[in-house]
Image (cartoon, rainbow, N blue to C red):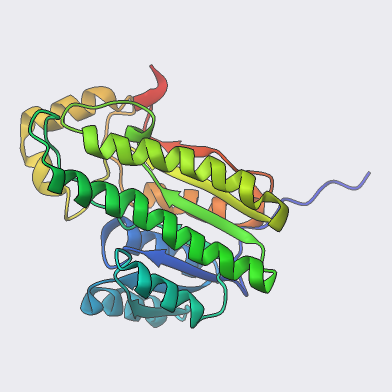
Length: 254
C-alpha cells in the first residue's frame, strides 16, 4: 500500500501581494509567506514602513519588495496590476475602523470604513483576478476579515457591515473564479494585539470584556494568523474555497 503524501505548505516560485503590509498583521503575513519561499510584494501608502519590513525579510535571505500604492485610488490600482505579472497569492489586508455607536456615525465615517474595507478590497481583488485569468495563473485570494464578519459587536456597526460584506463578497468570488482555478477565502481573527490596537487594551474594562468572550483566555497575536495564511496560500488547502477560517479563540462558538 502506498500512503498518500501530505500536500506541501511551501510557496517556492509563487508571487504574493500583501496590502496594508507596513505593520502589524500585514507585516506578519508578508513574513509568513516569504518564509515559505514566496516572492512577496508589500503594498501600503507609506514607503518607509514597507521598505523597512521588506529589508528585514530580505536580510533573512528571503524575497520581498516594497511598492507604494494607495488601494483607495482605483485608477492607481488598475495601473499597478497592468504593469506587473500576475500574482499567485493576494492577501487583501488593508483596512480601517471607526468604533462608534450607530447613533453617532456620520456619512464621512461610513464612507471611510466601507470604501477601504469593502470597495477597495473588491477592486484590488478584481484587478488581481483579471491579471491571473489573462495569464492563466491559478492561485489563492485571501481576504482579512474579522470575527465581526460573523457576529455583531457594540460600537461596530460600520466595521461589522464591511466585514460581513467581505464574507459574502469572498463567497461570490469563489463561485465566479472556480473555473479559472482561483480560490477565495477569508481569515476572520479575533482582537489581535498590535502597536495600533494596544492602546485600546489599556482600558481594563474593555480588555476584560474582550477576554470574557475569547474562550482560550488571551488576546490574539499576529503569529496566530501566520499559519492560517500559509495554509490558505498553499497546496495544503487546494480544495478550500468560499469559506472563512475563523481564528477567534472560541469567540463565535457560543
